[in-house]
Structure formats: C-alpha cells, structure tokens
Length: 413
View 1: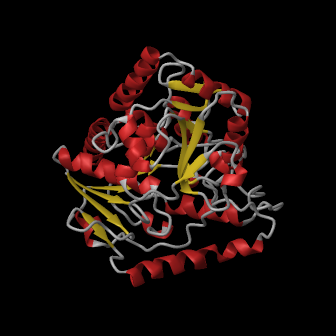
View 2 (view 1 turned 90 degrees about the vertical axis):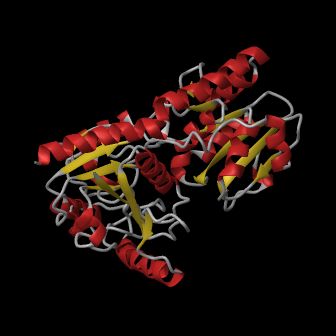
View 3 (view 1 turned 180 degrees about the vertical axis):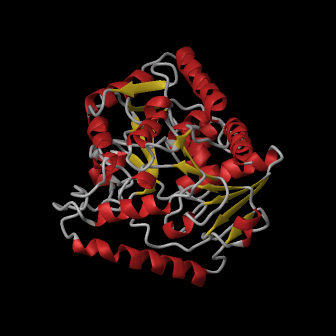
C-alpha cells in the first residue's frame, strides 16, 4: 500500500506537524508512506519530498498566495482573520508521486494544491479536516455563522451584504472540484458534526479520527530541570500559554488575560510561547517570560514540563494539539468546554473544562488545579499523560487510518 500525504507550508507548523507525525507512524507500521510539501523538507529523510527545496521556489509559492488574496481587497470591511480563497496552488494530479500512490491523503493544502486539480485525481482521496476551511467559502472558522450549511454568501467575515460574493463563488468552485472517490476525516467529533451539516460534505463519506501527537517527543521531564533550562524562577507556580499565533482571535488571548487578572493565588509566573507580536510585559497581569515562536521540540517539551498548568482559552478549535502535547508531558490543561478541546480534557481528572466563554470560570479552573495537594496533583499529572497516550498517540491514529485505507481500496476494486 502506497500512501502520499500532501501538506502545505513549513513542517514546523501545527497542521503540518500532525501530518508529519501520522506519516512517520504509518511508515513505522509498514506502510509505504511519503509526504509531499512545498515547505523546506527534512534533510536526510527521503520519505519527505518538497516541491520547493530552494528558498526562491518557496518564494514563488508565496507570491501565488499573495496574488490569490488580492480579491479580498474588494472587501474593505472584512474581519482581519485568516481567509483563504483556494485560488492558488498547483495541479498535482499528474505528479509522479500522485500517479504512484494507491491513496492520496490531503491535509492542510492551502497554497500547495489547486482546487481544480483535485477532481482529476482518479484514486481514493482521504482529506483530513484540520479546520473548517475545506467546507466553507473561505473562512477557517465560521465563528457562529452557519451560512456554510447552505451556500455561503453575505459573508460576515468579509463584511459582505450580497449573496453572490467571494465566499459563495469559492464554495461553488470547491463543489465542482471534489474528487469522485473522497473520504473526509475530521479530527474531532465537533468538526465532524460541522462537516455533516455543511452543504458541501452533507452527502460525503465522513469518518472521524482524532488528531495525534508524538509521545516519543512529548514526555515529562523533571520540572526543576525544565525551569533551569528555560531560565524560570524555581519556586513560582508556572502557568503556560501558547499557540502558533497567540494573538489570533480564535485563540482567545483576551479571555486568558481577563482570567489571569482574576487569579487570587500568589507567587505566579506566566510562560508564553508563539508569535506574540504586540504583546508586552506591561500588558500582562502577571510576571512573565515570553519565548516567542518555539522551533525545537526540546524547548517546547521543557515549556510543558516546567508548567504547573497549561491554559488553552480558544473560542473555536478543530482539535487542540497543544493541549495534547501538554498532557503528554504530564501537565494538566484548563480550557473551555467547547469545540475540539472539550473532547481532550477529562474534567477534574486531567484538568478543568470551564463554561464557555466565561473568563471567571477559566480562572477558577486554574485555581482548582493549583489548589490540589501534592498527591492529588501527581495523580492528575499521571492521568494527563495516560489519557494522551491511550487516545491521541500517533500509533493509535495510524492504525485507524490503515484500516480506513484498506476499506477504501477494497471498495474501489
């Protein structure tokens, strides 16, 4: 069985890392798995191939993406949230790796795969949904809008008041481009329900498989050792917070700051990682350390292990990979009881699920974790690691995908 994964952008990004971990777990299980990207690739790994190994080639992809976004200028009142038209990318239907594959597995494809080329792939296609974009008219999270359940148009994120707007046209183009033999795989039950309600995937084959993490990369290390490595105060109680882009509206940084400002515990220290542009120590309610974007796993593993609690205040999240990484390192998580994160945390067993979207209850969740006696705290850390291993480790996801691939190939005969 030959499987080709297609994922766009840098392999250090959240969605791409999930695809990479799955690819490696499938390879370890004996499947002939290859990953194709337009990112830099991985030196020495022949199973990871790049359409753009040189910087100038990656620049060309970036230029195509910028050109594809020009149509957004017609909407000056749009929200400044991520919105992708899908007008960029290249037709990979005739690429040798696509031709050789038995299964073509799509992940985050924005900027890599052209929509028009999808319908030309004449073999089973699996599309792992890592956000809502595959079935919307361009937004990555609908944020309360349900127009994707019909035909989009009058898009609130575009600030549009007409039916035949960019979002409606993007959705039509997606409908015309769907492969004939497609199986859609959302990474959470919440996202699966959204896909089933969507006009695009309502009749599609949908099978939910949770996102995965690499348990060999994310494991507990000694807390004091991790704090020394990061230069953190040894005696403080550390609250970790982070995402690829912390300031994204979906990530709920404003809600986290409100919650942190309500904490009554003493001797607290905030540890933040990710793109924190515009965030300064003066704007934070606690003494803090800001690491910026973390590129290496050792540092990220130390972040989770150094923390007493990880706070994940997302308003909307397809899954919540940072939550699972934290739990894999034995650190409990406080999140809102909503969307993907609600499926990860076991309330008052591996953390705390706050009422959406009450910053006060988010604060109570942090206080609850910090208030546990040492024996209970150690049990919660052990529960966190165990739940991550049993439900979200890469070998478990790989086995489920392997079984899915086999069913798809059998039905295609």
